[in-house]
Length: 233
Image 1 (cartoon, rainbow, N blue to C red):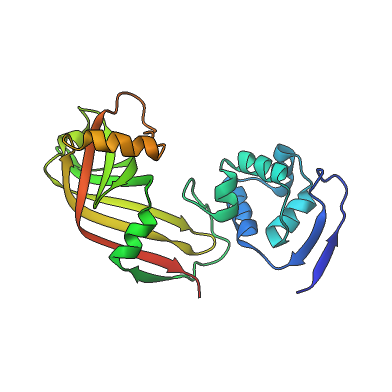
Image 2 (image 1 turned 180 degrees about the vertical axis):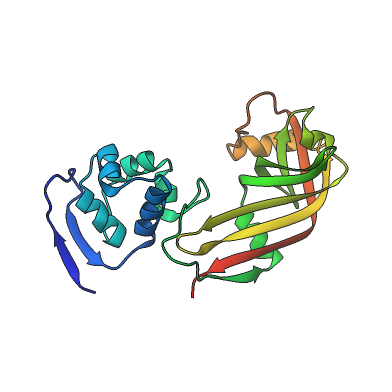
C-alpha cells in the first residue's frame, strides 16, 4: 500500500502521523455518523478541535487518532470510543457509504450461549393486553436461563406464565459484521431463585439501567435458541 506523509497544520498534539491509503472500519463509521448528523468535515472539526483535512485522512485512509482525539470525536458524534473503534449497537449507523456485502452464517446453540456471555443488554418481546411489546433489559445468564429485573407492576411482570422471546445482538452495519441470538421460552417469576440471582448479580456487577424499583427477578428458560453471524467475504 502507498503511504501519505501527513503534516498539515492545526492538528491536536498526538494526532500527526502517517496515513496509509485505503479506508478502514473506523473511517467508515466516522463518515457514516457524520453524514447521519448532517455535518461537514469542517463543522465536525470545529466541534472536536481537529483539522478538516485530518478528518479526511481518518475517513479515507488508515489513520489511528490519539485517544484524546477519539474521545472528542465520539462525543461530537454522540457515541462512545468503544463503538467508534470496535463497532457496537449504541446508535444508528446512518446512511451507508457502501452496500452491506456480508452473509449470514447459522450459529449452533453452544456458540449462541457463548456470545450471550455472563451479562449484557438485550430485548424481551411479549404479548401484552394491547398487543406485542418489546422492552430493552439488562440481562444476566443464570444456569440455562436468561434473567433480568423489573418492577412488580410492569408489562413484563404481567406477562409471567406466557411465551416470550429474547434477543441480543452486536451488529456493525458499516463493517458488515456481527451476530444476533434469539431465545424463545416461558417467562416466569424467579422468586425461589432470587437470592442466588442477587449473588450472581453482585459478582457480575449487574445493575439495571431503568429507573425506579426493579426488585422482581424474571427468567426466560429457552426451549429454542438460534443465532446468526454476519461475516464479510
